[in-house]
Amino acid sequence: MTRIESDKTVVGKSPEEVFSFLSNFNNFEKLMPEQVTNWKSSEDECSFTIAGMASLGMKIIEKQPNKFILVTRNGAAPFDFTLECMLSEKNPSESEVQLAFNAELNPMLKMMAVKPLTNFLNILVGRLKDIS
Image 1 (tube, rainbow, N blue to C red):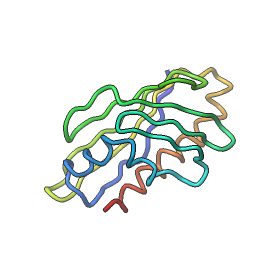
Image 2 (cartoon, one colour):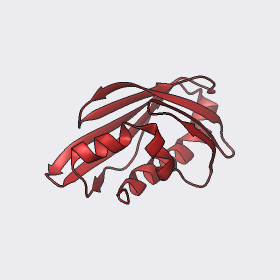
Image 3 (cartoon, one colour):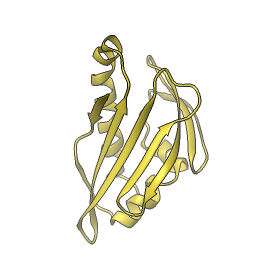
Image 4 (cartoon, rainbow, N blue to C red):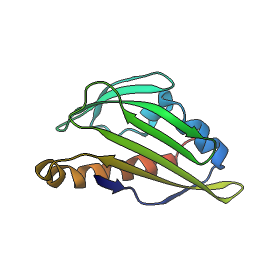
């Protein structure tokens, strides 16, 4: 199992606000970089294409209010994976957020995917700072 983690990022919102935002895939489109196309979402599921990489589908399978969201592969994807959204309170108006991507990657795919996936996760958490 390959685990790829984003940087820990402090967001100027309470854990409740960040959890509410991340619990709805309709909000995720605001976090996506320009390499993401064909975005489709509902509250609990989404699908999209990352230019030069793959088409992915995801669905939320577990929520622990204001602390944790677990997302898994849904539909077509080149490999099994989960995405963990981990939240903690820094103070009442700030949260620390980290994303972790866990996947079954063969050695060749791992070599090609680790850097782009790390960058992708860091873009997502970085853009969380701009949510309103």
